[in-house]
Every structure is written in structure tokens, then in C-alpha cells.
Image (cartoon, rainbow, N blue to C red; front, side, top):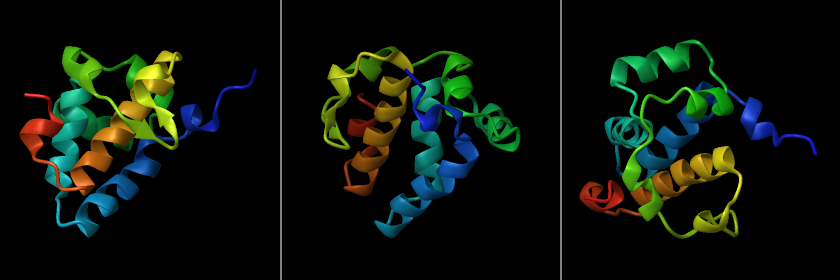
Length: 116
């Protein structure tokens, strides 16, 4: 079975869409960055370096310094699929990120988004 094309898509090509979605709802790029760094363990500088290198999603998550142990608390539906039911690890991580960005755009408080 062929890999989903999101795996080979660069994070840098999707990132502006995450930021635009958040900003349309009155949220900020800083909040998007905070979510991504919380989920992956990248520092802001490391994250920006990944964007500059045009790293694809598969590599981005495979090389993540420390995936947040609280990410398993992320529940809900993205693109009609329950994130907690996704078996393929990389796709689950991508959908976790999508879900967090959705929560940000829906106005959820950062403390709740970051599962504190």
C-alpha cells in the first residue's frame, strides 16, 4: 500500500495554513508555534530550522526531540476519523496536530489545548 501523500508533504508548505486558520479566528502565530513545540519537543529555533529545511511530515515527527507524553489525551474527530482510533503512528501524530490547531481556531483556552 502506498504512503499517504501528507507524509512527503513539507511541514513548511502546510504551516502557513495552520497560522491562517488560527488568525482568522483571532488567534496568533505564536500560539500555533507553542502548540507545535509542545507536541513535538522542538524548541522554537529547532522548529524554524525544520521549516527552512522543508522537512516532510514523516521526518518531522520521526526526528521530533520528545513527543509530548500527554498527547494521548487528545481525543476527537478530524476529517471524519477519531484520532484515538488511528493505528498508524505517523498519521496519528499528524492528526493530533490537526486536532490541536482546530481547538485553537475554535477558541479553546491554551491551558486546555496543551492538556495542563
